[in-house]
Length: 183
Image (cartoon, rainbow, N blue to C red; front, side, top):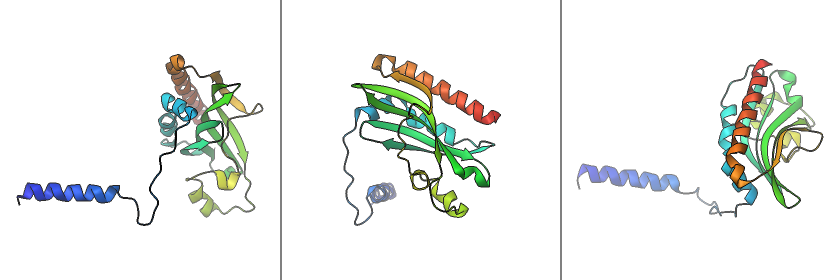
């Protein structure tokens, strides 16, 4: 058997091993996608927010993004808090949500402030856990902003206005980044 064929066979075996699920795990089942998820995909919300978390801000620590879902809504959020020992006391969500209101899909972009809810604070454990999610310490499902919270944008989603919504998202996130960098 030529060396080229051995190498190709070896590479094919490695790819099959890599694609296998861990022993004993259930096969991944494809969940039906909700229309709200499709709207967020059309806006490229996940990748747009992911760009913010790759930056190193002077005054805040930023994590995510993460997809969050409820009965009639879906969203993509990042979470951030001030640097320093007491920065954990308030966590802020910045997100894009697609949700139903009066039978139509609405698009919301905004921020929400979440107070710390755990009985104790251990900085070492918190520092590791907060990178993976915010629900444990802040007891929140990541729902869209309510009336009293800071909504940056709220409009009905129209497919023919997708690029306008997408541009608005980019502009709002650039403005948010400028505010964070300015302090």
